[in-house]
Amino acid sequence: MKGIIIAAVVAGLLLLGGLLWMMGVFNQFMPKEAMQTATTTQQQQVQQPTNDLPTASNDASDSAIAQDSAAIDAEMGSLSSDSASMDQSLNDQPVSQEY
Picture 1 (cartoon, rainbow, N blue to C red):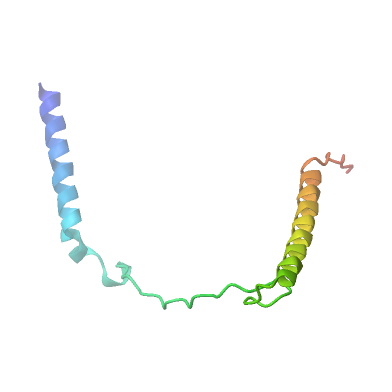
Picture 2: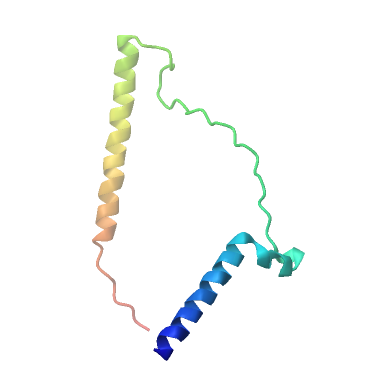
């Protein structure tokens, strides 16, 4: 019975301390230089996506689509090659080191 009373008192004190902390009562005891204040940052400018394709962004002709498709295929081929190189590097075997 005595242990239950002690546990209830401790829980009550923790609850009271938590409520006082959330209400900001303890802020008056903190030194001013230790308190952190929120700062605002400047708005970043929206970046426009770059057009890496060989044709103009407003060109919708069949030849432009064919050129863009060929450029995309070339990029995908180099991506596949890079991916294969990465896979190979992950499968490398360690070399014994001699001291």
